[in-house]
Length: 126
Image (cartoon, rainbow, N blue to C red; front, side):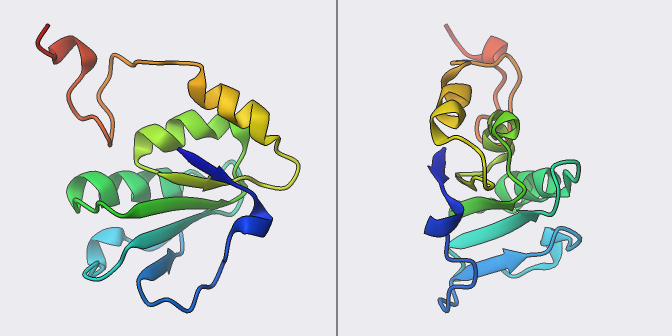
């Protein structure tokens, strides 16, 4: 997962290939042709609707472009974001990028499947 700071993130790019999605929108209602990046917003860390949106976009809609987490993105959420289908996270102010990178590197493998690797670890051929 790529980590960027708030200052590096362009919130409203003029590029029509970037879609900013409110967290109360059902992504299954969208046409994603020509879209290369989708920004999903976490208005506060206790609101996890963007996790569900990312999973739907990645698994059910088969979107292969970038899914970016914006808003109140905290270090302890990054592992779940990556497993839900996010490629990039814009860290909230006050979040340390070095600690964030350590958090992402903490676990190498998972037994369960996820949005990126649907096949569970125990189901893989040895």
